Image 1 (tube, rainbow, N blue to C red):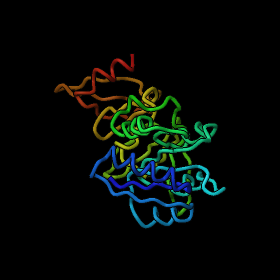
Image 2 (cartoon, rainbow, N blue to C red; image 1 turned 180 degrees about the horizontal axis):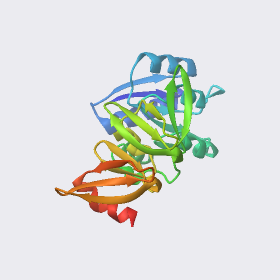
Image 3 (cartoon, helix red, strand yellow; image 1 turned 90 degrees about the horizontal axis):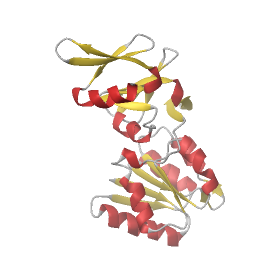
Image 4 (cartoon, helix red, strand yellow; image 1 turned 30 degrees about the horizontal axis):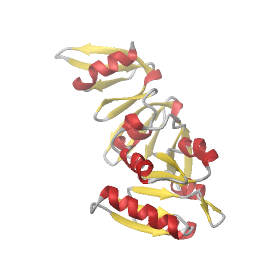
Length: 232
């Protein structure tokens, strides 16, 4: 686990580092940056799995990191006193928003969400960000028909018939997408429930979902009952 902390207050940065080490024990690489510029440079040069980000960095706006790196394949946990920014943060796909002052149990709860989608916040992800030609493009989640896994990336199949490549894996996106709107139907597919029209039973005990546009996607046998219950 590679973790970066961007926090300008040394005391808080040390607390975050200590708690993070306590949670992950020896299974991590941890670095701390105290300015926006240092943080941006580090992320551009070094892959990370988790970013712990303050929103006020010596007067600089931490959201600049989100805007510049929003398509990068890591999870972001905001640690900030600016709780009025929480809804905006979740709309851009952060894993959690930990308000200051915080304690160890609250930070551990945020880390626990990496493996437990049911504990995700109620604020729905509104946008999926893709980087194309050096430009960040924000795509409304409601305009996605389905998402197909493509190795460490994901293909977004949109309602207008176009496709976009997202830098996060299918597993990573599953953590962020609201379970009320999206469902994993197969190891390679996540479907927008509003676009799922029929659940089909095929010869040989195979299953598929037919979308409103007529496309059919395979359904994993172990997921059939959950999908049937959600589509009723």
